[in-house]
Structure formats: C-alpha cells, structure tokens
Image (cartoon, helix red, strand yellow):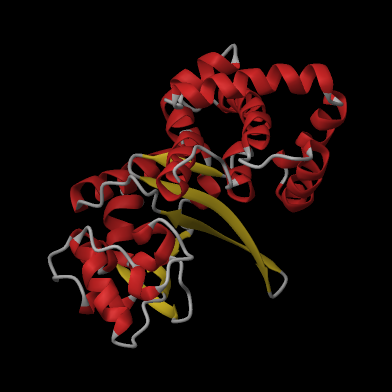
Length: 287
C-alpha cells in the first residue's frame, strides 16, 4: 500500500471523498504543523492514549465541519497500520475488510445527513491500532479486563451495518475467527465472545418473527443484561438519533414495527451477553 490514493481505491471510498482527502492531505502537509499532527497521531496506536490522542488531534486540526481532515489523518495512520499487518503476517484481505469501516462510515454519514462526512474517529482507533479485525461478516475486538487483580481476556463482537446475518454467513465468520485467533492471538482461544448490541434486545422478539435473521442470530447468545434506556437502535434502524418518534420513517417492516412498538409506550433498548458455549465450542474452538 504505497499511497493514499491506492488506499482509498482499495477501501472503495467514494470518488468525491477521495479527491477531497488527497487535496486536504496536500494542504495539511504544506500549510499546517504537520510534524505536530504526526506526533499527535502516534497516540492513536495505543489504547491508553486513544481518547487524549483523538482530542488533541481535533484541537490541532481546528475547523473541520465534516470531519474530512480527521478522516485524512486517520487514513494516513492506516498506511502505518498496513505495515503492522505485514509485520504480523495478517492477510491484505483482512486488512482491507477491517479498514473498510472508513468508507462505510462515510457512506452512512451521507445516508443520515445527505452529505459525505466522518464522525467516528472515537471508534476507528480500534482498527488503526490492530485491536479490532473484520473476519467475514463480523468484527472481533481483543480486550482485557483487570478483575480481582487478574487480567481477564475476552473478545468483543461487533456487527457492521452491512453484515449478512444469515446463520450460514455468521457461522462461517465464527469458524474463520477461530482459525485467526489460533494463528495470531492464541492467548484468546478460550476467551469468551461477548456482544452488546441493540440486535440482542429482547424487545425485538415482540416485533420480528422467530425465523427472522436477527432473532436467529440473537438466540445463539446468552443475554445477561438489558439496558432498556439505550436508543442505539435509532442510528442503525432509522439512520439518525434526533427524529421525533411520530416522525420515524416506515420504509421497512422493521422500521414500521419498531415505530408502532415505541409509540405504544414500550422501549427497545439493547442487550448484552455471551455467545453460547455450544456454538462457541462447535464453531470457534473447533480444530
């Protein structure tokens, strides 16, 4: 991966955005304190400095209404991430699939606001630092928690907005992830797979048929906690979080059913839990 243009092409970034990125990159290197920017960007590769790094980068970049300066800097970081993947021996396919989050988020911004932009810098540090990988349809983030003086490893499962949730595709992702973990992160081979998502909200069972892709996906998790007040579903189902309930669109069956559910006074929320041991053993840890 030799240039930002090639990188944007591999990511299938919209052409209009690619041209803006290349122009901004030239401008940033010529008219701003690029050395300072590069120094700040090193913080994006270390989990303990993600938050401060993003904050300092915003401040250093200044006015950036659509977030494209931030996107440009993060894609520049992505070229360095590629070197990490090469060092680790991880395939170009997984690299591109994982870093395509950038073009996906740019398109989602267009769906929500009618203009290309980028506002997920708080999230994409995970991909840049090699903590989160897309393997097949799903994303796997390698995490550690300190509890009772001991480090506890687990894998946080994320569902991209363009994921195919047919069980065959989901199970293929689990199998491929198991192979990936054994090869690159063997310390995590017995780590539990945890998911926190609106897709695990028990309320969905009231609005979707039992054979729907979402419910079949949900049934393979042991849900241990429900956050009823969460409105995270709004972004993924309705593309925005600031729409009054009565004005929610009804373009899909899910949108219509959820709108009726909400207007009846009930809450959707989100669920959190672990992939069932049966599925974990059969698909993830199988040799």
